[in-house]
Image (tube, rainbow, N blue to C red; front, side):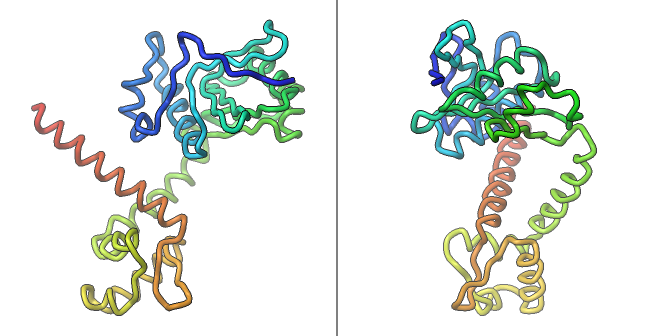
Amino acid sequence: MILQLSISAETQHVSAQDILDYRTFAQRHQRLNEKNELRQFERFHAARHLISQEMDTYLDAKLTPDDPSRTMTVDVCGVKNGTLTAVFCQTAGLDEPLARSIETINKAQNASAVILLPRELDQPVLKESMRAALEKGKVTMEVLGWFDDTFEETFRETLGLIELLGNETRMRMLAPLLEKSGAKRDYRTRINPKLVYHNIAALSEAGLLDENNEGTYELSQFGKTILAEFITFLEKTRKTLDESKTGR
């Protein structure tokens, strides 16, 4: 079975500019009758992920199999090289329409699916069709983790990173590495040598820094991602604060 993406009047294409921040996404892609903010955030989360995988991304896309009676509408769909990735934002948990959709995707040669959930589910509640798709690798389940016990661990890890990055000395060491690698001697001309060694150790231990063969330091892939996200967050926050002050 081959699934085809059908563009309807409700389908919206999501561009890379649309997912720069949540406010932009919400303004451009707000459903008229959507009152569930969590569902909208899940759609934003899914769109960002699919676009990061270089997929053409659509909201409220219709997927049509050989049997038109089994046409389904998915919250978010990514398309790349003829392969479809469907995302179902299940804020209310699992239901019968989802089970039917998963059964169809499990039979499709060119599709897979992600089920986004706000909290963990007990395995016994899964339909047989979902179990089969999960075991086959056609479907994955992702829990955002902000509404169950994983929140505490996520919050603790996030605070640890913010504590590392929310330090002027460390940011003065990290930011230039977005442009080129740096050596200890370069840091010692601008920063207290005692602070250089201590902070290099802390940043390396956190996985943000890598030391190359020449003895210089560069951002790890994890470090590049985290630093870019952190600077983006700071910039968006600054703009929001400026707008708030101007609007008073």
